[in-house]
Amino acid sequence: MDAFAPIQPEWTNKAIHAYEFCCPSCHSSSLEAVQAWLNRRSPVITENYSRKWQEFYQCHCGCAWWAWSSDRPQTDLSNQQEDEQGDLA
Image: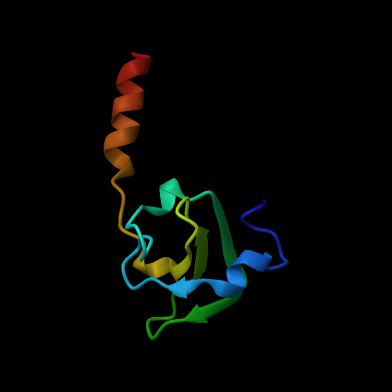
């Protein structure tokens, strides 16, 4: 399954809105999902003119859920990049 496929997968039809960025049934993170699909064809423009879109996830527990991309928790990639650069030295 291509997360960027233009056609919406059938399993997304029963997805429920997760108000926290995790499975509403078992609380697994999006990283643990079996499948993912991003609805990039219909972005929403926020009041500060940034875009957000729906991210759909099929959880390993069987629950299909979606959340706004803007609700995704922040990651600290700068520490990860520093660690990787340290390994190269």
